[in-house]
Image 1 (cartoon, rainbow, N blue to C red):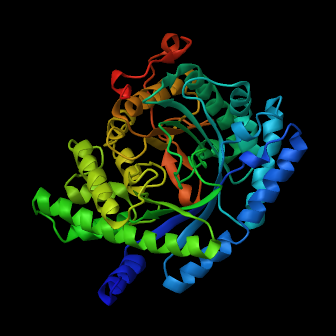
Image 2 (image 1 turned 180 degrees about the vertical axis):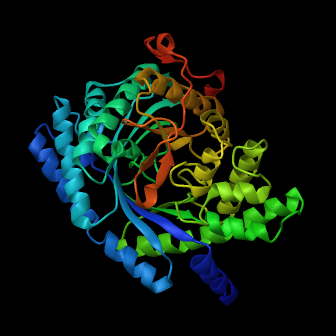
Image 3 (image 1 turned 45 degrees about the vertical axis):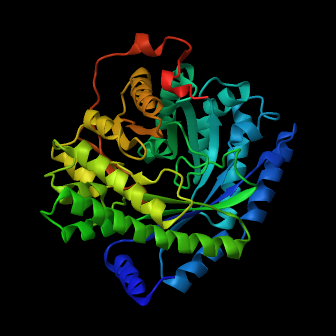
Length: 454
């Protein structure tokens, strides 16, 4: 039971510390929408989404009003579309038609984003997988709310380097297709290793094939709450620091659990997981980098940053799993650049480089996220960066991801502006030495020895 003091404390978190439920994400299986006729697939996809999700936004607003808890986004994730369109799509343009149906359905029900324009290719690509991947630049340029993700590696299967090489080219093409919008399409495209089936956060959300026909997943965020809590224990020991983070994460997760159960009951859809992720926004006071500074760093990127982030990530997870039996998704701390004003400040001060960010991804929840790089960065260089990040995920048995924006026509020191939740970002320099011969090898990097646990 939640007592009155907890209610007062939660209200303070919401009003003054930027606590919010970042998203209610309704996962919908589209496996029953497969058909050999493309028009039939598009029709089935539109009808199922608009039917199952018709009350999602209304329900979210009702819960907001009832509990005075801001629910920033209402989203949908669907079965990876490479599976849904496999029987009907014979060329990339066919998948683009499905993307347009997804976009139309999402706008009809009023959600912010729809994820699942995806393919799972960690060990190899089917013909449909490759067609979907090649359709991404056009699909993301002709839709507004569709998000795409490609899983190219896992601890169990290794890294599909053919897919990694292709994704370097696709990211470059997507940047060119959306160059009039500061290459915004790339902000809706993420490459994964060990992608989870139940992630409610965009752009990586998709409805995994292990999931039920429909499920409610909730993502909660509160970096401002954690920072405020840590202000009261400045100079204290690591034990006190860790306990403070853990207790705060517990309280934040309880808010998410309340919202998730309410949404599940109102929609008549099973509750899946709570994802407690300290996901920042461009708003002042809502920054993971500021938490790292509160722990004792001058800027994110200073010596000690990786250790501080590891501590933060671990304590967030420990607090979350005590608050809910169904913590899942990514859960921990995100370190996007464009969405975190503290990270932007660190880059502009020269404290944070792409290489340091890569080191930090060994201990954070995701990976290299929302990072703008020069528009003339080679496709093979992008593939090399992806390969490095996928290797971190594969070896460490964790989810890693890459969301790079090669900003068309921009160079280091320039800025890109996305607006809203996606924020803005300084263009970061990239190591100019080549990796062409490495990336252009065919095949896959084998799974590490510790993957064989049967």
